Length: 290
Image 1 (cartoon, helix red, strand yellow):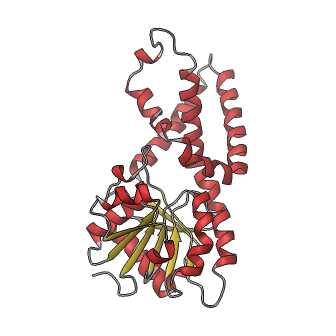
Image 2 (tube, rainbow, N blue to C red):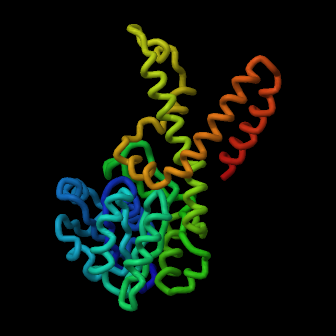
Image 3 (spheres, rainbow, N blue to C red):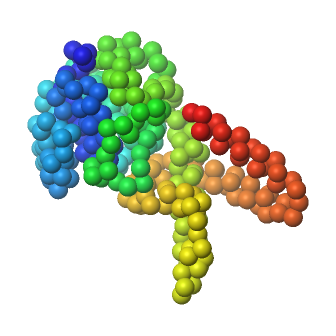
């Protein structure tokens, strides 16, 4: 049974992440009542799934009524646009959390909106799970299993009853909660998630510009290139706000990576590249073991 502190959940944003969260709750915490809110066309698509007990479009206040937990699964720009209304309309006893890919901007904004005595509690969060294909059609109840779920704070926040109940809910759906600060989070995901995305985009666009009339060099591509370019299938609409809100970290990371590429080019004719391959192999083993 789920904690009595969380019995009604409203998911704001019923795409891949919001839909997957609802499906995970449906599978692993089936006694919850789950509502969804989104644009009319997206909400209609969500209605046809088994993820939500009811869906809403237009009036966000109605969807928030009675919620114990509000889960914001919108792109960060849209999340910031709706945060003020959520702070005003969500029940004061409820917990509001988000799934945005950068945390500093939204946490700073939330501090001004949720800091009143009768405001709901806000907890920044970010599940490190996703796919290159967006939309509820690609949602998966097991998307978060064994995935890190960043929670912004020092961990003492879990002593608050509703926050503690949410952490237990994350563990129930298979996620691994990790507490850290917003700035540290944005630095880490900038290197481990956002930089790989930009590198895949750069490689994909580089190769696309060099296609000849016979499709070379892509006609000779094997599974290695497909694996390398998987992230290149993500739409810009998903990444626009992420890049804009983590620009400083990404700019510094790209500079450092460009220096590494220059260094590799200088050593192409030597056996010194073996050390780079060894380091990359060790990192790959670490990732496979996580």
